[in-house]
Amino acid sequence: MLLSKIFLNKTIAITRGGKNNSEFTRLVKEEGGIPISLHTMKLIPVNSSVFSEKFSDICTKKYDYCIFLSPNSVDILFELARKNNLTHLFGEQLKKCDVIAIGPSTRKRLEANNIFVKWVPDDFSSPGILDLIRRLEIKRGSRIIMPRSGAANSFLNDELNSMGIIVDEFYTYYPQIETINEIWIDFSKKMEQNKIHVIIFTSPSSVRHFFNIMQNLLSNFKERFGNVDALISIGPNTTRELVSRKVFPVESREHTIQGTLELAKRILSGK
Image (cartoon, rainbow, N blue to C red; front, side, top):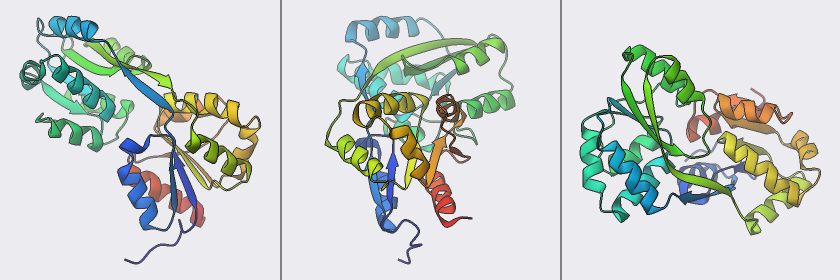
């Protein structure tokens, strides 16, 4: 395979844990780069009693749509359903509504659980979900369920409510900041030595946790951003979180790992 050489011996970091990063790691290594997966948070599922109570409430209602906003929301929801022997009932509930996945990774996780995904927006983001819903001309009074993180912002919920759509948020987990480990210590040393070439920020929460962790490892880490060739954000909400901290990234228009790495190549090559 002919390599582009752009990533050769370059260190590419992403604010997402290794478990969900097989594609990122593979693509970077294939082109001679050095991938670093920065796990910024631990995902703590809600307890079984809270889940069962919410599930019972869901089963009393009829939903028109179900929106999944991340692979994590799929994984944790179905793990909770399995632990509580509710997988079949939840699957039956989802068959009664149209399922929307925010992007291809989320779609794959749903299909692995035998859930048919009817819609994926062209833009894999919350604004992309809104554009899709407007194109579908979803009626006022329609009911949507959204399994998601308990720390998620209210943007999508607020926008849907303003359209007269009834939204039932279903919190399945809460993020906690990751413990500092050898990966983070190694990353901070490379930052100090100006050996980080690309940092990809994947979500607003990962930005917040990144800053909290780095403040404990490298007091002047923000100054080191100036020596990073490419600071990239995935999605407008992530961009806004960085800008609020006086960090100005290039936003990837394609919210996929492949698209983000292509953007990194263009920046590194000066195109």
